Image 1 (cartoon, one colour):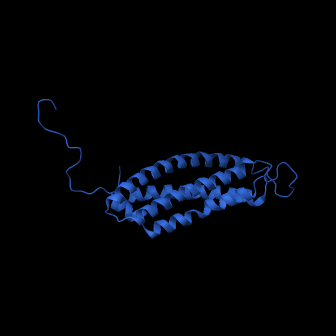
Image 2: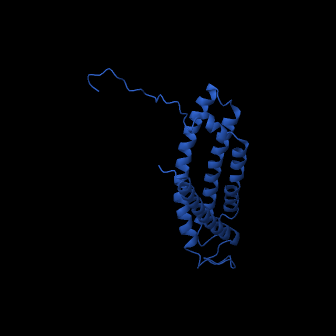
Length: 188
């Protein structure tokens, strides 16, 4: 803009409020519902961790299966831990205070970054788990512990079931998101 004295404002002068303000985030993440949801979400990773650790070494056909369960459980607990810390952060501070804005902004940025990193890892780990578990489905046996194709039934079947549930749940979420997007007429 050579030759003019106009300046471009750094912020918009409009009176509309950002849909994602700290107050809105506080209402979302700082609710009892959010905290209880995060606690309930920790049940499946906890089950994965317990089953994987308990049956470590009981799957000669593929020792990566208990490792898959342990790592999935730890990462899942880390994600729910992040959600719980975020909920507590928002619950402990008044929604319009400066302390909340500074602390919540830092907490939110760190949480989002950690969540993205862990989620990308878990996605790749999930694909590996599917390959490891589904590729031996026709070879695994649950009767003779001394054979090389043995796997503890609780370990294998729980892993198999959790992978199937995850596939179904993810597909349903994807369909629901697409349906909601189409029905509300929102397009980005």
